[in-house]
Image (tube, rainbow, N blue to C red; front, side, top):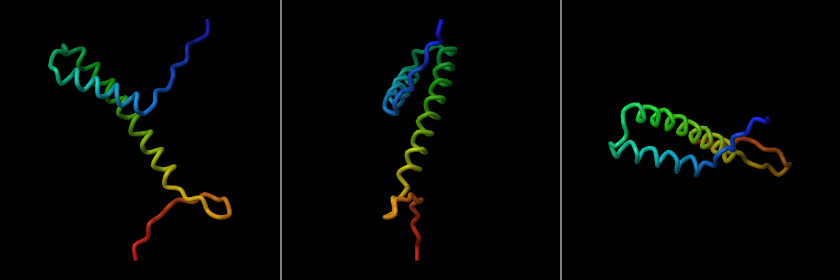
Length: 78
């Protein structure tokens, strides 16, 4: 039997999941064990979102030069 692969969620899907967990925790209607599990899950989702944002930032901060090469964008203050 083949192992089922997990579909990687989009940033928006992860953010929605994170918001749902936060609302559940804020409601105060979650028992302690479930709250700990939800908090742990939320921290994992937050890390995934943070990693995706950092990766996007790295990609955005590149410049395509006229010769076709890509370099990092740097702001220099004079």
